[in-house]
Image (cartoon, rainbow, N blue to C red; front, side):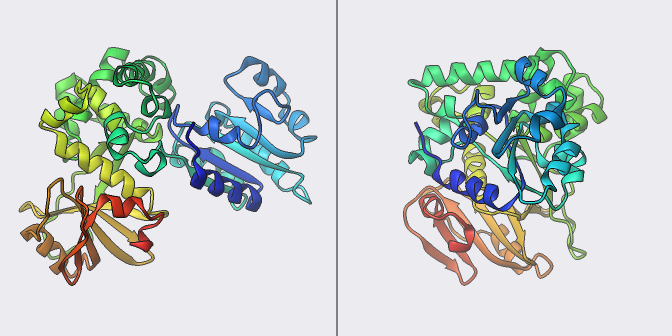
Amino acid sequence: MITRAQSEKELADAIRRSPVVLLVGARQVGKTTLARTFVQPGAANYFDLEDPIDLARLSEPMLALQPLRGVVVIDEVQRHPDLFPVLRVLADRPGDPATFLVLGSASPDALRQSAESLAGRVEVIELPGLGAADVDDVDKVWIRGGYPRSTLAATEEDSMRWRRSYIRTLASRDLREFGLTLPAASIERFLAQLAQHQSNLWNAASTARALGIGESTARRYVDGLNDAMLVRTLKPWTVNAGKRLIRTPKVFLRDTGLLHALWGVDSEDALRRHPGIGASWESLAVDEVLRRADDAALYFWRTSNGAEVDLVLERFGSRNGFEMKRTDAPRLTSSMVSALEDSALALEHLWVLYPGNRRYSLNERATALPLGDLLSVTSIDDL
């Protein structure tokens, strides 16, 4: 059993501060397990909106919730967004007799319209999958991904079987509530198409042609996968009048374990031989950076002549770049120099993440940073 101490502390602090806490994350990422550290399922203060009994208990939500005290958990809230106005009324009671911990398998953007009535009353926490620091095993998280049942499976075969079953369940049932209504086989093919373009520029038109669907449908499906927190869309940084910059986004599958399942890569040896290993390692490194970059605006930077920075984080008016290099000893490249010299981009620092063990300077504003050094901190401010 993995103890997610940092997530538990973050959630406990939010529960102490706010009358409503919205804990979001992809399905099976561990939200319910984390919530169980505060209220056990089966208790009067626990409601699972996929359970018919709990749905019946909430048929009159005000009558059911008003008498409760302490922490009240409501799981899978995206199935009944009509509860948000009720929570607003209960959150405004004097004395804060209850704190509502609301769990959702959808992104904050997907729930924002429903939760607008809770403005000023709700704190949103996003729960990612298990990270390399959680299990102290970079390769295991890289190969199997961060879904607990996959990461902690007894064998590689068990892990792969779980991931394949998870993808089938998503395609046949769970993604329909996010607007993905094609047949399950077509949705799996769509996911496989995204996997083939992992960490590269995504062209909606070419994906649509490959699947025989409209370009608008392809874009809508990517939006739905973003809402389901299965993919992450990185927009290009474009505030630059002096250079011709790429306008096409990048689309990443968030979890490298699902990426490998869609590739058909079922072992570490197979991954080492796969031509996409660099894109896979980049995805792992991007995810680990973003775990340590709360409230940052996310971009990538790329010019029409091919100069690129994999990740640009904008926080409090300053920008830092992160370049991911799966190499023994990264060097300063012409792309890095172009990024550092771009006065409009104005990078404060460029970090070059790599899988080695020695930190060293590339120039006064660029540093080669071992992934292990990143894993040892909880915020990029501590680098």
